[in-house]
Image (cartoon, rainbow, N blue to C red; front, side, top):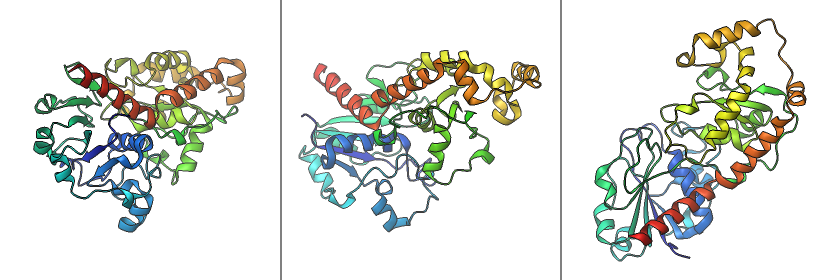
Amino acid sequence: MKYMKILYLKTEDPAISHLNYNDFMHDSLLIGLRNKFENNVVDYPGAWYMYPEERKKRIQNSTKKIWGNLFTLYDSLKNYDFIDREDILAKIKKKYFDLIIYGSMRGKNIFLEEAVQSRSKIIFVDTSDDGFIDQSKIKKGLYFKRELYNLEKNVYPINFAIPAKKVMKSINMNPKNILSPLIPGKMKTYIYKNENDYYKMYQNSIFSLTYRKNGWDCLRHYEILANGSIPMFIKLNDCPENTLTNLPKEKLIEFFNMYKRILGFYNPFYIYKKKFWDLEKFTNFIKHIYKRMPSSIDLIKENSEINQLRNYLLDFTKKNLTSEELANYLINTSKLIFREK
């Protein structure tokens, strides 16, 4: 199998490294690559915070500088010390690695000059929330961009993913909530202290609100899908064509339009951030204010297709949205493009 020796480099972005160790894009891809190629993937300087045993040595189980409370991505890797991280620069010069991936490339990229001179195949992963593309990198290797707003030559879309082991085997057929109680942006609803309770909340909900934050991509979208809930993705129709390319956007827009009437039972002040308030939402709420909200059981009975849609989305997630599939996408795309050059 080609690309058996992979160097996976992480640049400390000066804009955010003082706030958080982790980067969801970098981390979800690393999980997929390690599951695919095992210890032939050398993460350097070493994403120690992703390995529970190593993390405990360094910071115990503190989440102070790890965005996301250690949920979803941070119990998947092990054997930190089994990876040979010695003499990396010498190995680059000798073209020891078949592929060098800059898994988080904002900032000053270590060993970049040597990597280019080595003629190893190079991939840059731009994990940032903005639409900026570093033109200086495009001619040095393949460039994968998470928030890709306009197509450019040698630039390819990439998105978050979720470890396969985190995806439910089957949906909860009788969820008690119509809408999940966690409301994005409403901090008082962020009450979940452990991953199990957080996931159960989504498993027990037919629908879950989500939307664009700083960027369109968000790990929350994948956590909702992996737990058998239907994302009610606000204004997804505004998403650029080449962003969130792994999600079934047309289907999610269709499902939102089919069931957005349900949101009329909820006070807009409680379930939307201010930027999503509008007259239509308040008008719909007033129309529903004296109506009895159906129970989740009644809603499913009256709309038999709901569980079919949930099963469809869960199956789609298993086949397309895992870290392992993300690694396949990156490797297969790079094989194709490098062969053409």
